[in-house]
Length: 165
Image (tube, rainbow, N blue to C red; front, side, top):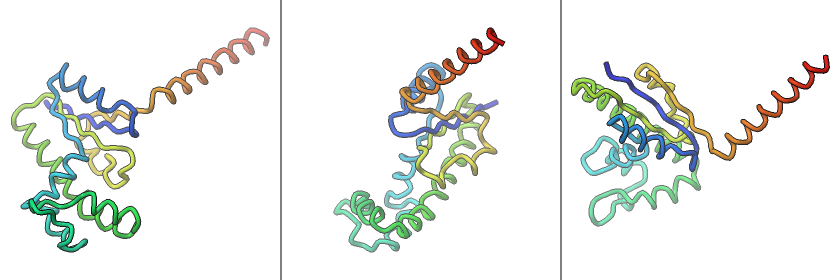
C-alpha cells in the first residue's frame, strides 16, 4: 500500500526541510507543485500553447521556452490574467500529480509526498484529498513558538485558577 502525504505551508515555513527528511529517511518520492507548474509550460507540454495563446508569441524566448519572468511581470499587474493563467496551469498540475501517483503506486512506491505552497488557492489539496492519506501544514517556527508560548501561558493561568478555586 502506498501512503500519499500532502505538505503545505508559507514561504520559509520549513517545507523543504520536511521534504528532505522524508526523501532521505523514508525514500519518499517528492512532487513539488511549483516545479510541475514549470514543467507543464515547457515546449510540447499541455500548457505551452494555451499560455502562448493567452500572452502572445512575444513571451517565447530564443530557446523556444516561455519567458516566465515576462509572464509574471504581466500577471502581477493584471489580476484577471493571473486568474486565466491559473485556470490553465492548475488543472494540468493536478492531472500530472494524479498520473504520477498512479505510476508510483504501480511501481510499488511506499511513500509519495505532494508539496503545494499555501499561496496557491486553486492548488490546495481540496481536489486531491481523495489521494491523500495525511496532510501536513507547516507554520513558521517563530509563529509556532508564539503559539506554544500562548498555550503554555493559558495552561499556567488555568492551573492558578484551579489552585485558588
